[in-house]
Image 1: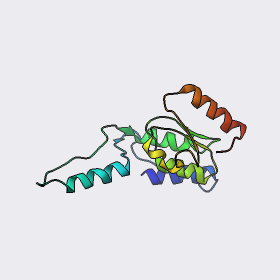
Image 2: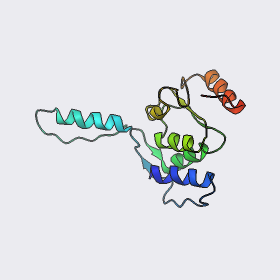
Image 3: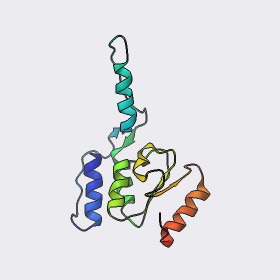
Amino acid sequence: MTRKVSMAAASIKLGLSEVLEMGNLDAKLDWGYAVDHVEAMWRMLQADVPEEYVIGTGKLQTVRELVAAAFDCVGDACIMPSQEGFGIVYLEAMACGVPVLAGDADGSADPLQDGRLGWQVPHRDPEAMAAACIEILKGGDK
């Protein structure tokens, strides 16, 4: 679903499509960070005795939040300075030539490669976020 939404947002931005059809926008999902899930799987394999496990972040986000984040990232800038973003959205925004700003505690901001490919700011520092936004809107390079 994440790929569908991010591709649709990019396609609409580029004029290749006009519509994104979705089901229940209020459905809540646990969009975990893939690296964390792989680590959890590895830890399961280390157990001496097989057990049943549930893997999740414990943080639910609605499909509506994903769609909003995707479309926020195909305007003049993609600004998601929280602790939780959607990595594929950052990639799609960069593919459209849209500058990306992410919070430094956001595991899904890995595509920014520690700030080398996009703006990364402390997620709880409004002044840093504002300064980065101003630089992005001025056409500053990152």
